[in-house]
Image 1 (spheres, rainbow, N blue to C red):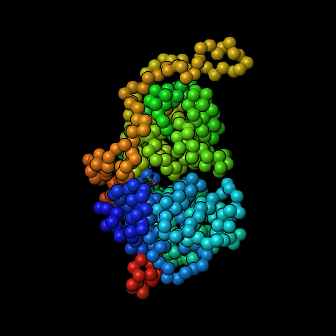
Image 2: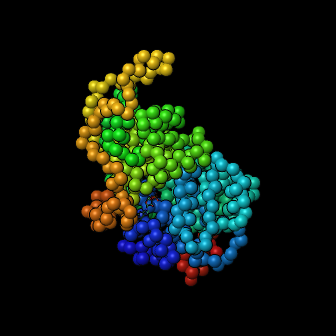
Image 3: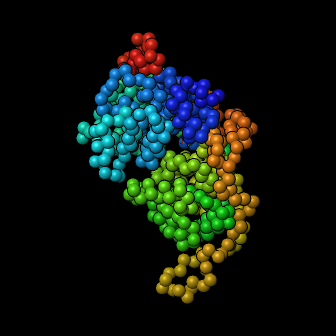
Length: 484
Ligand code: AMP
């Protein structure tokens, strides 16, 4: 399957080529034709599968080919996302893929001034991407009119529910027209997700590319059992010894993230922290510095890292295991994106054994345990400045207490499977179909779960159903009768 066969228009195909994508990912292959046909979609797709392009490309195609009823300044499409970072990334994808199409879009989230967002809305946009809270604020101030929305997209719906956005989402649903196309993306399928999707989707097509709660299978997972007191040494050692150029490190708390970033810097490893207590500009800067390779380690909490898309990120480290096992899957999904390979390493201390077991239960498999040699090394003694004589020869940087067993450096050698050029691996080596990774062994599994309680439709009572019919028989293909 090629992008040309999916029914996308030449301008959009040019945008895809400019991104360097050669073949559609499985979610794109399955979802794009359905979306272009104007249907609602219930997509089970984890981050990293190429889902953003699946809904962005089709949205751009729809908006750029339908001008049946110009609607002034009110936006025609709304994308809801759980975090600012994800919203910003989606908005960036829209800008990138939509170059030359003349479609105006904007991104709205909290934590930054409202005025620029209001000014942008007043100029008129076709697409608004945003997090629910700030969107509702702006609606409340009558700065945002959602009454002309034709396409509503929920990205990472499960994350939005986890973050307590259910009421905001329901409010937003009441503000958008019942006649619309709704695209619903969620990595997992819980009772809550089913309840929400049942009420907002109309006869959705189910599309699924990865089992729920399943870690991407192209991510190598390893556990190192280490006492809490030597975690930091272990991490510094892994980074320096493995010559890692970029690693995303997860901590449980914001304070822990700050402290670890400082400690890594003291160890000679450039590091910065990203979490919810930082201002939006600090978060943006931290992410940019990391993406630009100005810092080696980005230390993050779960919320801040949600949805982060970092090209060719090879290493994710769980400095502390998450309390919620599902977060492990989301964390390690930052690497191994779009078919590239990656490594996820967990430093597990005795206190965390229960959390590890919960994760393994979720994954339905044990994570291989490996050893960092030299574990007899005494834990680092944090020396207070008041006792400089105790500092001894603890010369950071020079010490190499551990030697990772059997883990070669992957620095820089990892590239995306679907992308051509620039990655160091030719597409023939690692493409989904060319590289010996057929869909039956890959993380991007298609279909096959309709009867297993996966993305099931039916049994719904859709308040929109009666008003949405497809009565006019179309002529314009998608949405012609129902939406315009
Ligand atoms: P997402 O699942 O939307 O977060 O996307 C994951 C990553 O895959 C992003 O870095 C995209 O740029 C990349 N990507 C999306 N579609 C393709 C494709 N067809 N070929 C190569 N890379 C892609």
